[in-house]
Length: 131
Image 1 (cartoon, rainbow, N blue to C red):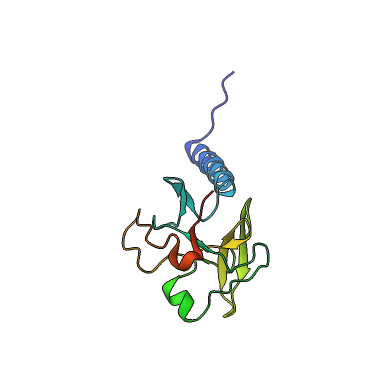
Image 2 (spheres, helix red, strand yellow):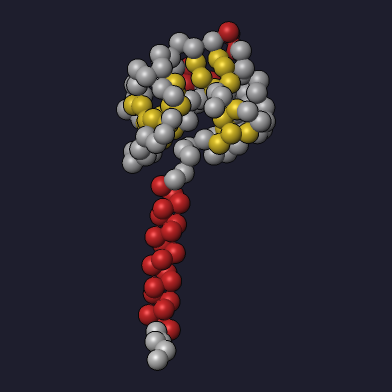
């Protein structure tokens, strides 16, 4: 005896299975950054940096005001959650920022295209964010 499933029910089952698989894959995401040529990059492909004056694990960024204009934070959404080496800190203005291994992550305003790394070593306190 062969069991047949009506096409509407089969479509529903396939959709449900697909949705479950996609949700599982989303939960395995590595975090808000990718690795390109040995450094962390943001979703836009731009190089990320860390600031030596930030204390790892403090949950704070000391780069605020004009500093954050030159070194824009890698912002996190209000619902983003820590995962693996990535954590979310709250900035002085109440907004959320991503951190890697406890160090807040930033872009450099003078990097113009993906692959630029002009902020590395700036004032001897800005470093490429490395995995």
